[in-house]
Image 1 (cartoon, rainbow, N blue to C red):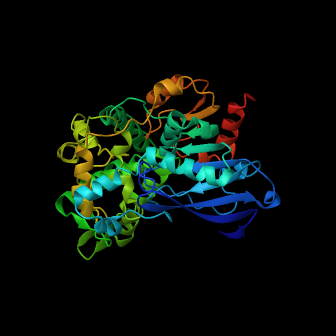
Image 2: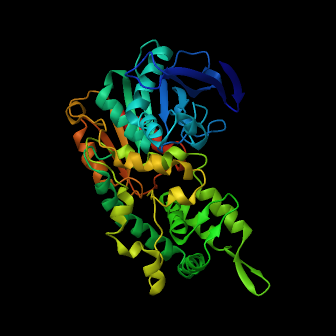
Image 3: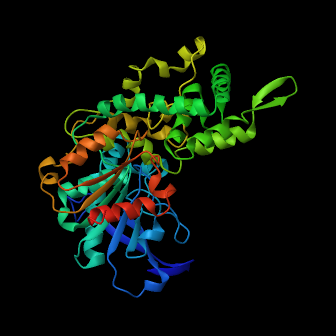
Length: 432
């Protein structure tokens, strides 16, 4: 273990070895990296542990500097563990480079089926027993991390002292189709709100999409920018500052080159940074799989369901005078043609979309009888996680306290500084 300092905190690097398949504990092993964070003034104290599960799927724990965002509140009383979930960050990586060594697409798909919430929670339990000597710990789950925390409550509640969930209460029994049927109307509302704030972006977005329809661009990274790919910049609209970031991105889209107007290098560079999955390919490959349970395949749900909402079709919008609708947290087959980081994984993704042997993720019976204190922030009209689904799940978890707010978007736990986590801690302890 290596320890070092940042302003106000002491950090320690941990690397844990866990089974790739927990049902085969003597089989292949992988590494899980985690960064311990403790207040410098309390580094020598015996503090309770709080493990942080990042959103995603497929995203490493955020790299904070000092006591940024919610960490300021957490280190007042916890020793925090920022976990790079399996396959992400400094844990044993899973990407086009490493998966090629696994063999054909079928072998890759079977391998990646072991990287969902159920395996992540079993990793957590292995690590908890080694780190705490068997004592339960607290969990903070953001977005997909909240899905993992809900699975944790279902299958290993004995490992939990208390649970805080932010923007991440999943539907317990909804298929991916249900998720996306609820999502597209929310996305449309977010786009409408953006155009109300920045009405000049209606014409700008149409102009960019029309240019791409006539002249698809290949970005410096090799990403193929089509109108559909451009629409996926709407993913930004689910965060607190996302509408403003999208506006500033659009305003410098074109440059005059003699008698021609071209997409500017600065625009292409910024779009490439937003759209590439090179840093988190599992987000794309496993996105719909994180909803899968039982024998019903996801079958490219977001793509199929989008056809039920024809207003999102770029060509239809450009043929008429309707505003171009951006999309949100949806993954489509074309992602695996557009993004060079995903192209080698297209067949693997197809096989995961067709898979029919998914293990259950949630146990409604155990959730209804849990004695673990749970508090959840539910963001009203959250673009990424449906509020109605979240509130139904909240009612199904015994004793869960909710804080429903429209003050923040999906990134509220970060954007609010200490406020969201402080509120959830107080709720879980009946202090408010």
